[in-house]
Amino acid sequence: MEGKMERVQVGVIGVGRMGARHARNLAGSVSGARLVALADPDRVARERLREELGVQYSFDDWRELVHLNEVDAVVIATPVEIREEIVRECVAAGKHIFSEKPAAKDLATTRRIRELLAGGKVKYQLGFMRRFDPGYAYAYEQIRSGRIGVPVLIRLTSRDASGPPLSYVRTSGGLFVDSSVHDFDLARWLMDDEVATVYAAGGLFVYHQYAEAGDIDTGVVTLQFQRGGLGVHDNARHSGFGYDIRTEVLGTNGCIQIGYFQRHPVVVLQNGHGSHDCVADFLERFRDAYLAEMQHFVDCLRTGREPSVGVEDGEKSLEIALAARESLRTGKPVAVGAVADDALGLPAAGEGVA
Image (tube, rainbow, N blue to C red):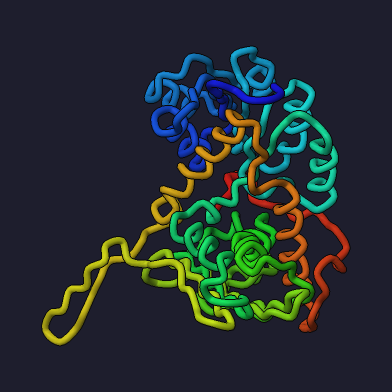
């Protein structure tokens, strides 16, 4: 598996929402890739997708897919609890890895995965798809080129149209761990700096039943970066209007804004009021990003380059999320990296919800 590859034959483990999205992209839209195998204990869902995409191999047991000679690389879209085991098996079999976020259920496991991959021949990419969104990718290039001077302040907004059921929230790890890790990754990436301390506040305003899980439905986190830059992140489980992901970076010589929440750039003005549609969910908003991140992964395998986002990025973002969760609990600022590790109890579905 060392060096360049002419064509990458890929197997997908897990055929839930994210696994199915990656499988469909690999089957018809990712240049240089061929989808050859699916694995999932849900035979009905797996066979339905296999028939739709014309996939050659199909397994109940993911180990059979990993050790299939025809497979060069594996996409992991499984429950988070088994991702370490899959990575371990892939490393042993010499199969490259694309993993949905989070890399693992806690920091200790994430670090074990990093150690498994260290110095090896297996390439690993983590599914922080927002980096591959055309708007975010363009903004990153503009910031790095000095277009807005030195970035000094970042504002990140994340709002879901509606919140998940209590059964999901109970095992999600909390709003900051489950959802905000994407924003924390963007903050590190766009500011080109690490977060030193965080201060968080939050409350329950719509989904009061989340109190049973010790969670919130709306939260705000302030960020202090190591070089002195500032950040503000707000996250809400319920917007009431649609899926809303936006970011703004202020520099010493300008500002750049990224994101939108309208499906179409059209506003209807009628009888004294205006209206427009909204993006429904993350699968729609980041459709192009999911395709671009998988194309990046395949291109890296074909050219021998390292993927631009890896397990270390997942570890850093998780450290920020845990510090934010601890700050919410204590009501005090918390240094990133100072929180004792614990199991996060992430969603049983483990599908890398955006």
